[in-house]
Length: 145
Image (cartoon, rainbow, N blue to C red):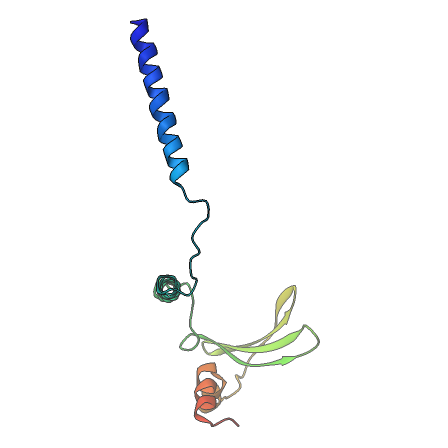
C-alpha cells in the first residue's frame, strides 16, 4: 500500500514537471507587437464609445422620467427678476401662485424681505422672454437683441 502511494506521487511529480517544462519551452521569448490602428482595436474603441454614449442617454432619460430633475416652466414658482446687491448678495422677486415675495439671498442665508400687497403686473411676453429655452431658440434663429 505504501509502495503504491509512493509510485503515484512519483508519477504525478514527473508528469507535472514535464508538462510545465513543455509549456515554458514552447512560449515565445518576445511578445508579438499589436498594431494599435488595426481594425479590431478601432472597432473596440468605437463600440466602447457608443456604449458609453448610450449609457449616458439612457441614464438622462431615466432621471427625467423618474422625476429627479425638474424642468423649468409650467410650475407655480417663477423668478420675476433679480438684482445683485454686492459681490455675493442678491435680491430676487418670486411669483408664487398669485403672491409675489421679495427675498434676499446671500451665501449662508435666504431671507424673506417683503411680501408685496399689490403684485407687480408683468406682461406675458416679458415672462416668456426670461425663459432660457426661448432665449436659446431666439439666439439660434439669429434674433439676439
